[in-house]
Image 1 (tube, rainbow, N blue to C red):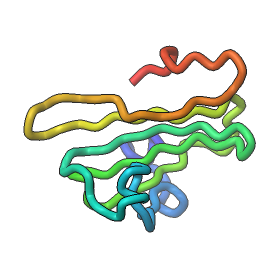
Image 2: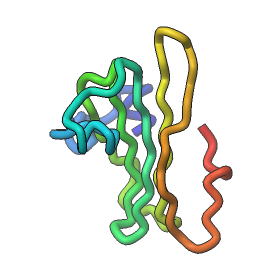
Image 3: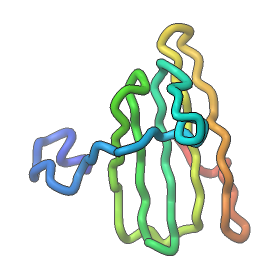
Amino acid sequence: MRDFIRNDVGDEAGRVFVKGKPITAQEIVTGERGTDGHVLTVEGRRAERTLEMQLALFNSIPYKIPMTNQYPGHAFAKGRHFSPGTDKVTELGAKYAGKNFDPSKITW
């Protein structure tokens, strides 16, 4: 992914996908857009061995970006909301799974 972004190595196939639904659970449940800010999440799914990011700039078009299909770690989800109007960054609520998983060890 880094070579694709920085050096234009490879093609876009299998790199970035437009999602059919919003990123945040609140928006999925209510069907209403909850923010005009940027949303960024990262999720590790041990059972599927995947690590995936999701991004929506100005909360308009949600994208999912597979980072690897060889993820060996614990299941987790973590996200941030970036407010362009106030320049504030807030953590999105998430549930964490996995024995002895420490979400504070995930760096941004």
